[in-house]
Amino acid sequence: MTRFVASRLLGMVVVLFLVCLFTFLVFFALSPDPAVQICGKNCSPDRIDQIRGNLGLDQPFLTQFTQFLAGLVAGREYGGGTSVVECAAPCLGYSYQTAQLVTDMIVQRLPVTVVVAVGAAVLWLLAGVVGGLLSAVREGRFADRFIASLTLGGMSVPNYVLALVLQYLLVVKLRVLPFPQAVSFTADPGQWFLNFILPWTVLAAGYAATYTRLTRANVIDTLGENFVRTARAKGLRPSLVWRRHALRPALTPVMTLAGMDFAGLLGGALITETVFGINGVGKLAADSITSNDQPVIMAVTLLAAFFVVVGNVVVDLAYSAVDPRVRVGVAA
Image (cartoon, rainbow, N blue to C red; front, side):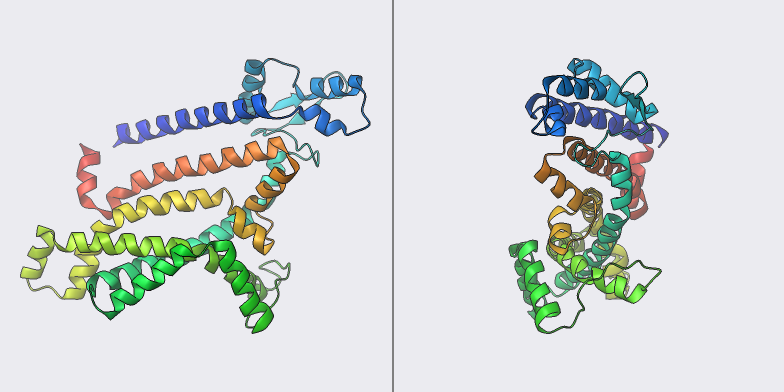
């Protein structure tokens, strides 16, 4: 088990290093000169050279990349002489548009993104697992066909279209939900919850359809296994057979997909946050792409990669808690 964990952690470090290298290389080779962008239209060549020196953009690629990695671990300094600016670890640089620390910008937005991701994940897992189990045990009946129709619709409708339609129907036309207001949870928990109902629903719809189909297929396959036949032959109740013997092994691939999807959402639900005006990491990424703010774009990319890699490791370690057959393989 210790060797298994160590190998996964080592692989995580290697993958993150390669992501950093590739992302940094893309921005170094393909992006326009950041110094010109920062300086503006009425700018002299001397001022541009000064900005390049302060940001370290006049250094070779290897030197810049080494400084970037060192900043992630131990922080770094920008500028020189009397105009030195400290950037504490993990240093992701300064925004070219706002001159703010990119780390501070992400820290301010990340809690909102976590709320959106957690709420949506709870909804799609409940709907997907329950719907898939019901569809599997009612295979070929009306409930199975009805759930299949719902999943087909959920996978076909783009989330930005669903977001606009639900906003118009529930907020503008029927007024079932109030217009969103910028309030904190402690100030008004009710309004705070209502603000996130539509984002959670829209974000969970497509995922729930995928998880329903995946759970259904896995449960149907598991119901044909020998250990399930043995459980039935012992006279166990059908509900106990479905829940304990068929569902748990069928959840292993569902856990894999859930870990990846949830980890990816922690990097920002770009479309959903933009449509609903949620000031999360996804909207920060969208605004940065529009303004070509390279440090912010690169930081969000690395953040998303970090969550995906960590999510992969967590899922691997959680397998043994769901499926005892995996526990034997890990111990070996």
